Length: 206
Image 1 (spheres, rainbow, N blue to C red):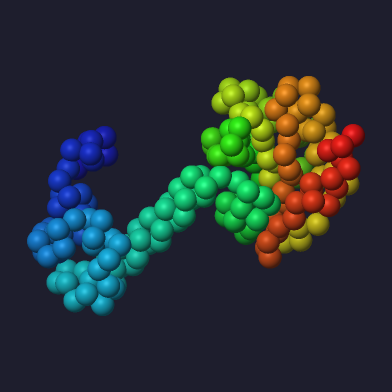
Image 2 (tube, rainbow, N blue to C red):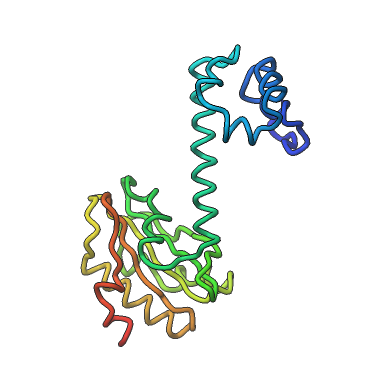
């Protein structure tokens, strides 16, 4: 199959055959009727017993299952919305083990539902690097009602620096001018995270 072929046109069996032997894919579809059933409900021991599914193929299926699980969890989070820092920390858990600092924003609608997340910069967080213009531009485009700033500390420690405070103050001021408030700035470490708003509420009252 050519890479540009439309996968949506494939049958369930044909799609499964893209990463499993044809005989194995045909057997699984006959037995379990759909890719959904195969990926969600069929026990690992039953998959191991299918001819043509060795350890390498089984690992692929296991990886796909994990991807599906994480997608479902992310979707649940988007539907539920952001209720507080704990939700933000969970949503950005993928930043825990990053070797460089990454600065992201979470765009929210008026009901605190997620519109989207967007990476703004990679590299050490400084007031000059994280400019309000670049930070708020995606929020203006998306007509967001508010944003949450997020960045990680590769050291694993989630306590804030002076630079973190300076960046937060600049974004709060810009948000007031644009009428798109900065709702929080959350720092992600290896053992969780911390909310700047919970620790420095006075910055938002200035």
